[in-house]
Image (cartoon, rainbow, N blue to C red; front, side, top):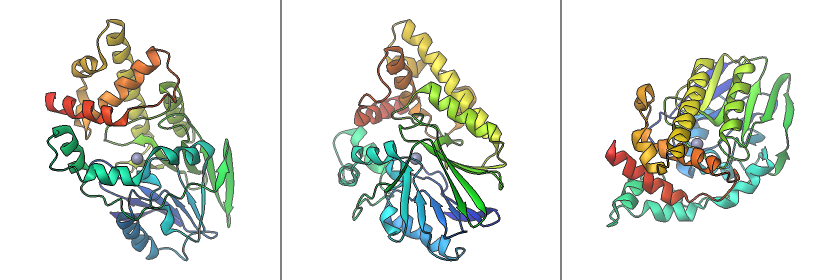
Length: 308
Ligand SMILES: [Zn+2]
């Protein structure tokens, strides 16, 4: 993990993408301070705080959660002095994931079930013990503008894209955007409760803001080219999935046939199955927030990874 100053008083804490859960965070050290997203567990969030403490003036008074996935907010409790800001649907999403369940999945390394032991190995770097969920207590609707002693920070609701409660954080004068998981860079995106149309529109919104520095939810810093590249991936995977859906193929058969071309070099290409399932749910006319069987998706992902 490393901290980089990407504009005056603005920092990114970047974790190299080593698989599931390696997310990024941000810090605006101004006007009492604001952190964008915490990490998946307490040890990684403590390390983030140790890095930030070398550059911050004081512990920040605000934490923004871009969405409710644990890898962006399960370290919230380590900022006891801060208010937690997020979208109403982000706060509601906290009930959908459980640290205790993930800790149990993590313990299944020697399971007879190869998909379960594979998932346990992906979780091995994380320790979900001691986490007490602390959802946002200051809720936003469409947008919120904060003035941090002359630095404007805009929170813009762009969901339901990657999840129902997606918020991006825009610093117009610094030309910086923290995207949360609306943007994955050089790693294959995974979507939960949202739609392709809204996800693509969210990426268009980021481009329209004209940022110079973009901090993705996962992967390295980039400019708008990285956003356009992910939009092209979503459009391509959706159209290929629709083609195979129309021919009556199962989602798994479709995923096996989709030629990822340049996207095959992104990490965890087998996450494709999540995106095919989303296209299939939409083709069947299901609502964006219909419950998703995450364990079944990870099982499909495991099988697809074997085949590829
Ligand atoms: Zn994430």
